[in-house]
Image 1 (cartoon, rainbow, N blue to C red):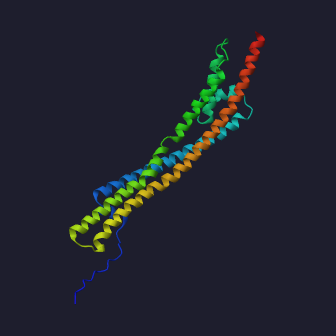
Image 2: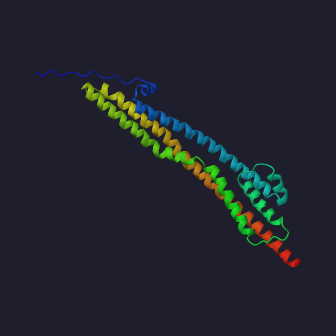
Image 3: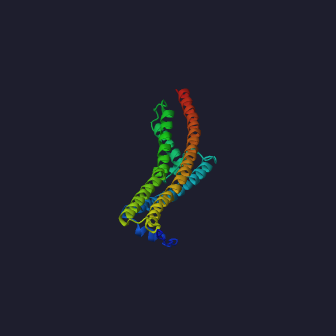
Amino acid sequence: MNEIAATPLVAAGTGSVFDMFLSASIVVKLVMLGLLAASVWCWAIIINKTLLIRRARAAIEDFENLFWSGNSLEDLYHSLSARPTVATASLFVAAMREWKRSFQNAHASFVGLQSRIEKVLDVSIAREVEKLESNLLVLATVASAGPFVGLFGTVWGIMTSFRSIAASKNTSLAVVAPGIAEALFATAIGLFAAIPALIAYNKLSGDVAKTQARMESFADEFSAILSRQIDQHAGQRSNAA
């Protein structure tokens, strides 16, 4: 009767996450550290952008309440031009600055003034949106590449496990399990970095789009107001002539 070698049961692993990291190969360790650093960077961006967009929305609310309160454009311009402005306030200051430059010369023509004001508003919107969107591509990159980087660590860890099997000529679970656990841990860290980055990127991109739409709406309304002013001044100048 052939003798059957009994394989001892392997108890459930009691190693901690830190122990798995320490026992991983150098390549898997580098993958884990890189993904953890990317996760920390993403969370810093998420917090910063959340606060920045919140401040921009609050500034838009405050400015629009002030703008539609009935104060004169000149008084509002003088009060805002003396301090840094953001969002719609910066649009207003830039457009009013172009407006006042056109009136510095009493004989200046109004031809093209409306077009210049609209270009100034467009450039100001683009600058404000650029501030809000900066570093959002980092979130998109981590969200798309994080799982694949973690998968690379997983594949490398499994390769290490197979090499351990070949070297020891032992297919016992005690030989295979540690390497596979470390490999799967790399994938888990990749998902840990990618999932919040993906959710935050979609949320923050939507918030930036809403803020941009609100600034564009104000720019259209303010451009219409200045257009009426241009027509009025042009009519007064033609009557005086």
